[in-house]
Amino acid sequence: MALQVVLFRARKGESHKFARAMEQALPILRAAEGYRDHRFAPGIDEPDAHVLLVWWRAVDDHVIGFRQSARYGDWRALLDGHIYGEPYVRHFSLPA
Image (cartoon, rainbow, N blue to C red; front, top):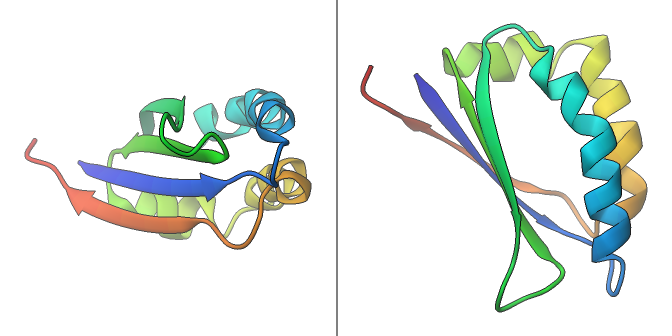
């Protein structure tokens, strides 16, 4: 199993708009092959920061299956207007 950690920065003062866009985008993520679960949370110390944790069956389900799919374009289209810069994405190996 793989854990994807994504750090987003919402445009200054627009965290609420970003959170609404994420709610619209989450069904796209949930429908992806290999998706297992996720958690999404706003920052406490930095209100414009948000973290998304996604559990995947395998890292390739994210990197190849999701990111190279048409669904990924739909996902990014919902979020891109609400984020500042590129998200920081890392993957971690989890024991089965």
